[in-house]
Image 1 (cartoon, one colour):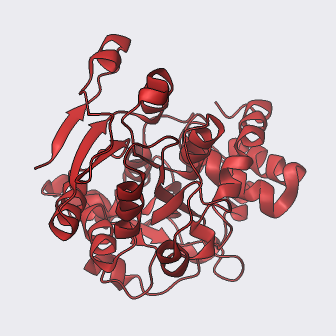
Image 2: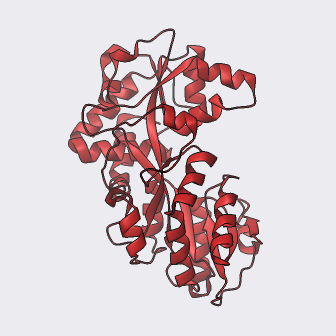
Length: 342
């Protein structure tokens, strides 16, 4: 049976959340998760069915979970921390949350780009930051790369989220790695100059802005688009039908990829169980859940995916080690501030 608890935003709720046994148990693993997808339940159920190890879940946002683990100190029952985006994983790493581990299974199953160089955390699902265009008003052959978004030809045509969004921070962090700080800043300034409106809303709002004609181009994670395509709401499906998706930089480094990932918590009372849990996340069974539940791309080749993802065929993905996205995050934030990308 899954023991599940959700953290509220208040400090009181953080301190009064579910109490897990902090002592080691042969049949328990305690997972602190910032992933809020109902489909993840299938991961926990499958792990328990496969191993007999019960999964206790505590949910909250990344900052809440980091603060809670730090407050709990050596008495923390946390075995695993899961979250999304390499930038958030890096922040947890910087706060001393993760322990380095060695696993032949993870080394064999996961590409090098999805593994922290010191084994502190691992990527188990891929999220592509795609470009979306209005099918009626825009010829997709006019744009082939993220770099093109800064071209003056697209002045007043781009919808994109705020600079405080971790997905955009990681995209800029990748551009810092590929073009240096000066080149990345020139790009960010060019995109600001091309805003159709000031940044607002989430990724879905950017796609809807394209569908409505408010902008011709938008940047968003691919799975938000798939959710619209598969929505039970007819208006959502009509929105998606007016929008096309483009995977940039196919003649070069490939599309920017981020991750959903996890690591073993420092001082984990059930460390061996925690490692077994991570190894399970790299299995074909778990990878199929990532690829069908939230429409994320698997990190293991050959895994069955949702038909929509399959229909896009093979395309190039940037093989930059995702840990670099976190390392470059502070400079990305400084660049955003300098160019006035609020």
